[in-house]
Length: 261
Ligand code: NAD
Image 1: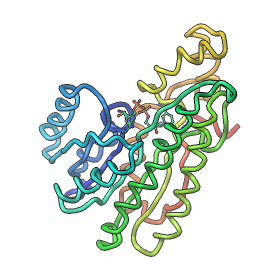
Image 2: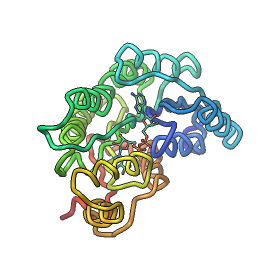
Image 3: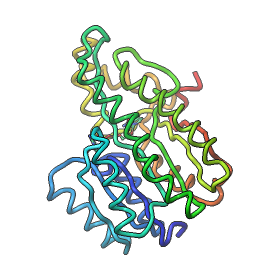
Image 4: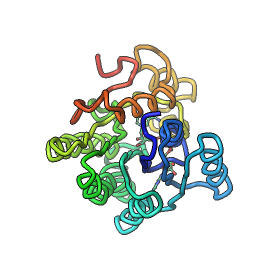
């Protein structure tokens, strides 16, 4: 176990990739702070399940990461509950699919604040403690859309490209402090986020569900298969290990060859 007595804060970890990260870090011995929305009974089941299955402590923060004031409380919960925040995973994200001229401004603002600005605020709050201890891992979930664009995803593509710039800057600032900062950029991973954008894509492109899956989503991915949440989480665990201490400022693709094209 590589993270015994360490603490991992994972944003957007009530579902999908974030939940897989939280479970993978707990499996490595970390206490975890989970965050995100959902039915209280479902969240409590996941939280208690992590404690029972992996023998660590797990706490839940309902912080809305579009609200900077609530983000400080999320990091403080980790530090107050477990004494430190050693691994920070910025993962919460949403998507909206529409042509620019029809893109609702409030959706633009929500996506930029959640998918990009929240990572600035979590890092701003977590970095002083990491610097003090001379060790830290910051892992940002970007996307293949941090390297290439797709039509109708203006806010998402802009936010993910921005997240890579923030990651590189932080990596340089923290390079001599034992803190690495990297992005993981998955291609299409089968999660509620992907499932929920299918109806909008059907509307925007005038396609059936099968056409969206095969001609839009998997069309981009040469392997013609979805990435799994466990594969993404395994890369995050590797980035948190000592073997990865010289990987910083990187944007690591896990996209079935999508961005090789
Ligand atoms: P998901 O919808 O399953 O999970 C998103 C999480 O974010 C949930 O826990 C949700 O409650 C939380 N969340 C939403 N709004 C929030 C807010 N305001 N404050 C706090 N938490 C909030 O999505 P996912 O597919 O697991 O995506 C996770 C990350 O991975 C996102 O950043 C996404 O852009 C990225 N990503 C996903 C894919 C994919 O194919 N699924 C591909 C590349 C990148």
